[in-house]
Image 1 (cartoon, rainbow, N blue to C red):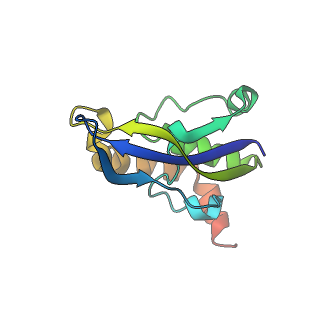
Image 2: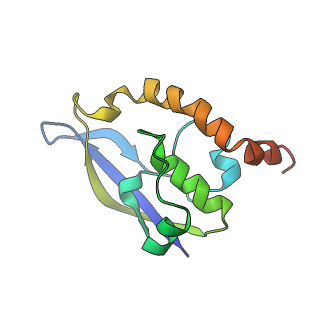
Length: 128
């Protein structure tokens, strides 16, 4: 296994746990991630080796919100193996001033870029 991911609990600015939790699916595949909609894995709940990060060239600097989603797709297209651990390992604070508070608009703006970047992968998905 090259990367492991787990669950995250969200809480608000008053330190109250919210109903929003990141409990990702037990299996992440390229086919499940495409077409590009949203990243089911909370990046803060991932653990991977540094050499993998270096191998894929780090984060795409054209992205400000979906860089972790791009990172995961990039790893999978290169054949890295991922495994889910069903444990709550991260507490993640949500508040009105955070950059991801505007996530739907940010995701839409970056979606076209990602679709263009992974067009070959998306086209090959049709053959699966």
